[in-house]
Image 1: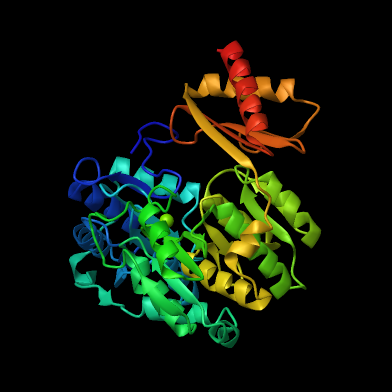
Image 2 (image 1 turned 135 degrees about the vertical axis):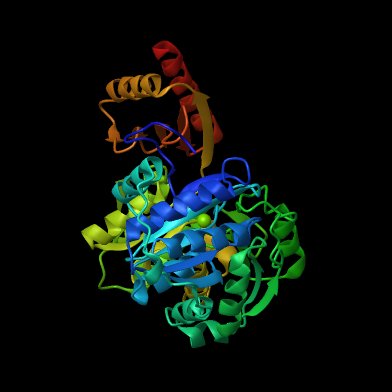
Length: 461
Ligand code: MG
C-alpha cells in the first residue's frame, strides 16, 4: 500500500487494495478499511461479501463483516465464491455493492480487498478516493446501538446462480453432443467450486488438477503463467483431453492449453472468442475494447471479420467502465486472460470465457490446436527499466517526437505500430518503472527494435 497521490494517501492500486498478510495487510488495517467502506456505502445499504480461498481469508472476511455491520450495512455473506460470481449477483440481484476478500493473481502471501459498485464493476477512482479520505481522516459513520444489525445474512446461493447464468449463455446441447474431455485447473481456489460444475452441466467429461482449496497454494502459484502451469501442461499431454482451462486465485481470468499441450497466451484465446462472438451475434457492434498492451497483430488478424479495436489505458476496471458508458462494445479483453462479455456482464469472467470457448469449438467443429494454428506467429520481448516518473515521461515524449511519422496510440505511454512490429513504452501506473513491450514478425526484428529503444532511452537519461 502506497502513500502519496491525491488526497491524504492512497490505498487502492490498479484493482483493489492488496498487501502482505500480517505485515501491511493486518487485522487492524482491515477493520479500519471496513469502517471506511461501510461509511462510503452508508447505513441501510445491502452489501454482498465473499472471499477467495487464500490464507487469512476467513479472518479478514470476519473482520470486514464486523466493520460493515458497525457502519449500519445490511451484510449478505456468500463466503467462498469467484469474484465474477459475486459481481454477477451484485448487479443482477439488486445489491448496493459488494466487497471481496481476495488478492486475485498475486503470490500466496498476499491478500486484499476489491470493492464492487452496484453495477457489478469495481468502484471507480473517485469512489476509491472517497474511501481513502474517510480512512485517513477516520471520519467513520457509526450507527446508533439501537439501529445495529447483529449478524450477516447467510447467502450461499451465489455460486449456484452464477453457474446457471453461464450455462444459459451458450448452446448446451451443441456442446454436449461433442463429448469434450476437459482438464480444469482452478488453481486451488474458488473457481474449483464453479468451473468443474459448469463443465459437467455442459455435458463435458471433466478432470481436475489443483482443485482442492489450498490457502497456501503449495501446488502452484495463483497466477496462470506458463511457468506456473508447467505441471498442468505436462498433465494435458498425458490425458488426451480437448483442452485445459486454468484460472487465477479469484477466477476472473481463464488461460487455455490446447489438445497438444500448448499454452495459449490470453490475447490469442481472446481472438478466437472474438471470432466466435462475431459469428454468434451478427447484428451486434464489432467494437472490441482492450488495453494498449494488447497485440496489433491480433487486431490485424480480426480485421477480416470487421472487428475494430478501441485502445484504452492498461487496467481492466477502466476497460469495463468504458464499455459500459459507451454502450457499443461486442466485448473486451486483456492480454493476461481476462475476457469481458457485456451480454453477460461487463467484467472479466473466467467461467464465462470457458463456456464460450467450448461453444466456439463445438460450433466450428474444430480442435483448439487447429484454431490456434490459424493465428499469427510472432515474437514478443518485454523488459522494464527502473526510473522515476519524470524521467519515464521524458522518454515517452522523446519517442513520440522521433517516431512522429508512424501510426501511434498515446492513451498510455506511447505505442508505435508498423506492419512488421509494434512497441509500447509506458511508465508503470504503480511503480517507478518504464515498461517496454515489443512484438514483431520474427526474433531478429523484435531484438533490433528493442536495441533501438534502449539506445534512445540511454540518450535521454
Ligand atoms: Mg483475478
